[in-house]
Every structure is written in C-alpha cells, then in structure tokens.
Length: 339
Image 1 (cartoon, rainbow, N blue to C red):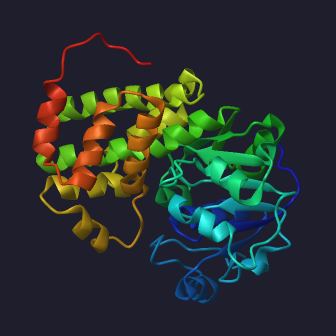
Image 2 (tube, rainbow, N blue to C red; image 1 turned 90 degrees about the vertical axis):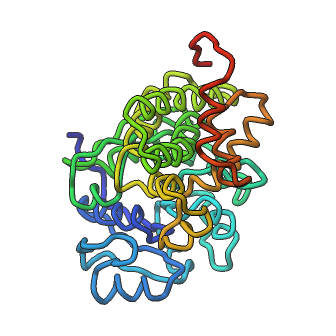
C-alpha cells in the first residue's frame, strides 16, 4: 500500500450512514474529522455516546470524531466531504455559515440527479459555489456503509478531471480494507452511481413479486445497457460502466438486503404504495427522485430507456408493476445493443 500523506483536517457534511462510516475510516488514517448534521439529536449522540443509532446502528465511532450542527464550525477544514442527499445539496451549500471552500478540494459521495435542473452533483457544486471542476472529486462504487464501518473489504473509485487530486484522495482514504481506484470520467461515475438506484428499485419489485433469477439477471443486464446509453449520450466513456461505479455498484444495490432502494421496490412489489413505503423509512432512498430526473434527462437527450420509463410510471403515475413488466417483455424484438 502507498504511504499515507500528512494528517488532514476534514469536514464531513452529512452524518448519515455513509458519512459516519467514512469518518471512522478517515480517523483510522489519523485525520482529524468533524461531522456536520442537521439533526441536533444526532450530533449529541455522536459527541456523548459515540454512536449513531439512527443511521449506522451497532457501530462504535472513535472518540476523536466530533459532530456539530453549525456549518461555520467547519471553516478551518482543508478538505470537505459532501455526504448529504442530492436533493438537499444546493440548500446546504447556500446555507448561512457555509464555509468558503472555493480554494479547497470537495469530495462527493452523494448519488443522484437534482430534480428540475437535471444536474449531477458536480454540476450542482459548480453552479452553486463556483468551485472549479478540477477541485472536485466523486467517490463512488459498491460500498454499503454498514460493511465499510465493520472493515469488510470494499473497493470504490475516485474520479476527477484532475487526476492528481484523485490520486491524493486515494491516498487520504485508502486503508487495508478500503481500496480506491482512480478515474478521470466524472460523468460516467456520477451517472452510474445515480441510475443504479433506479434499477435497484426495479430489482426490489422483482423480489416482492416473487419472480426468479432469470428475471433479475435480465433486468440488471438491460438496466446496465440503459445506464450506459444515457451516460454515453451526455459525454461518459462507455467502458466506465463495466467498472466499480457501473456494474459493481449496480450488482450490489440490486441484490443486497442492505440496499434501501431495493427495499423500496420490494415493498411496492408486495403491494404497498410509494408514499407508505417512504413514510416507514428513516433514511432516504435516492432512487425514487432519481427515477423522475433520469426519465426527463433521457427525454432531453432523446435516449431510449424503457426500464427507466416504466419505473417512472410505476413510482409517479401509479402504474401496476405487472403491467409494466408485460409491456417490457412484449416490446418489438430487436438486436442486442448497448449504446
């Protein structure tokens, strides 16, 4: 393993499961970590009990990791990690007291596409705080927070237009159980990490309906084709979708019991409404809103995405899953093609 660079003062914006898990990993590399959370009770529990029972149950947080509800407390950090849900990132970046970070590196681990604007996280950051693209890194891949926090071997990819910064993030975060590769394909990594959640909800519906492995294998394969097709249309490298941010993340999210998005789909497949499923969850399933954004993004770029289109109609128009599957299976026959 490469030698670690100097200890850094790192601010994590968002103390959900993933932000909390990464605070533990960064602490192991001797970085000084402060978590920001909107919820006062979450900050209090982290500071007093060194746990986060709402978002990362059963995990001990190091005593040296602290939490705050004041964004201004992060003003002296050298590096910022964005770990809030995509639909709230713009609001947080524009909040009173948000530190001036235009000369700092920002790493995002959020996965989604903003509603209405159809912007990826890198574009939201540039649009909101005018951060130069070469100071932005996306870190994504098959990585359940619960497993990373328990030091189970995990690999992800850090992507940036500035490969030197991507390599720096690789050094800052990497441990014996958390391995990081680098890429310069920001678009591909963001699209793969976002759209896999849409397909994961569909995978959950298959589970809820009691359908078999054949059905899910078809969904994952053709879902990856749609993700690739849309990604390439907006400038991604097709090969990226065969990697960790594409196939890797898609596979784990579609199959794991830890996946919130797969769980949403499973409950829908069992007959529950989208609204009732959302009300029952403490954490946000990014794939619901991303489905709507992906649907309109595909329309904007004139890209054929039949699975994403059917998921949009299930989640937002009340279409029955069985009818959606029937329409997908009886579409006009065609040659297998990816993009």
